[in-house]
Amino acid sequence: MADKSRKELQANLIASAATGGTIMLFTNPLDTLRCRWQVSGSAGQTLLGFSRSVVRTEGLWTGFWRPGLPPNIVAMAIAIGGRNGFYPLFRDGFGTVVGGTEKVGPRGMFVAGLFAGMTGYFVASPLLQIKTQMQVEAGRVNKLDGLYMTGARAGYAPTYSSSWHAISKLAGEGISLGGPIGSLQCLWRGAAVIVGRGAAVAASQLSAYDSTKTLLKQRGYKDGPWLHFVGSQVGAVCCTTFSMPLDVVLTVYTSARTLGGERKALYGMGGPLSCAVSMLRQDGPLVFFRGWWPAFLRISPTTTSSFFLYEQLRRLVGIGYLD
Image (cartoon, rainbow, N blue to C red; front, side, top):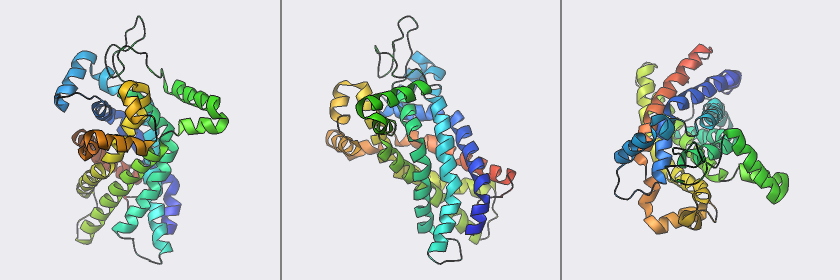
């Protein structure tokens, strides 16, 4: 199986990258909702009430669809391209290393998903940092003075005017502090959380999907769209639950310095671990699952559509459904 995965690698990477970029084009509003809700601090306001308020004051495009869209599309093309693209190679290679000739079980799939996720999300980390910042501070901008009229940074100018401006600004800040190494450190700020979350997402989602498909195929079910749907729903539940703590810490940590005030003092002065400890002390353990439902509502259709599209693209490029 390892030889087959190596031969299919290039085609699988293409199918995976196309899947990631296409899916994020349509699901960015839910991703923005998740990020804005996690930092809103809207006491007494429900998720539905918050969503309605944003759409009423800013509109769907400005409030949820446009924020972070370009960097998110590219980031997901890279992250999902690497995650799904390398997964069969790592999975089958792991099986070869342990001396097996058959397909590995759920544990081997989980390990393969970890490594595949780390690979894709590490490369995409700078763009994921940028899209998160754009999403959490999203709001309507006054055309006269260029300042936000609504959102978490109302009264302030947008941190970045574009993805390229964001990359240039982060790199410049890093160079002024520590030269080329400092530039890389700024661009990959929070990468440990991003990569950890990406690995958790990939490992839980891919192993749940793959093992569910394998189990049902062994019981006589034919590989096809119905099987892909069932496997993707199992993957969505596992993915949401595994990734939420890291997801919440990532959102709060990467936005704390820019949002300023008390949030910066509480969550932005140390590293991701310090941020997590502060969150635990302030709000208790349930804070790490704040936004579970919007995350699941985004991940469930995203997982379903992405695996469906991924499987069809695999067929289109001539390598068939994921074995």
